[in-house]
Image 1 (cartoon, one colour):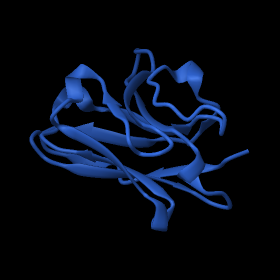
Image 2 (cartoon, rainbow, N blue to C red):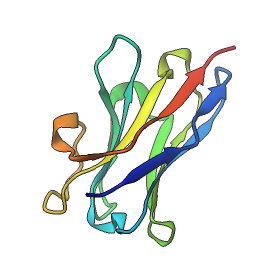
Image 3 (tube, one colour):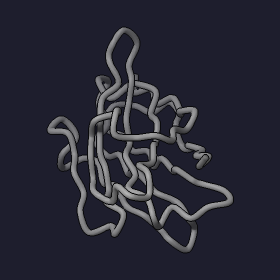
Length: 126
């Protein structure tokens, strides 16, 4: 089973930026479509962004379009989520997840993902 580790979360003021990283060990992420999700207290897990296995397709939930950018670096075996112009409503635990190798397309429904990281907290507050 693929093991994913998120990092880069923290406390940031409104309007600030953070870059989240999703790294894997022992196996390449190149063969997996990757998604970023978030879950705020009392709310369901939400699909924030995803990138296809090839990297040629990406998708974003409407509330982050124009502010967040997903990318992958094969050399570092890492997928990033660059978050700019952060808002208090972006506060949540952020998770990355990988689809199985036979599902190369981007998807933002959590049920489409098998392997999950432990999450990293993002808090946007003044």
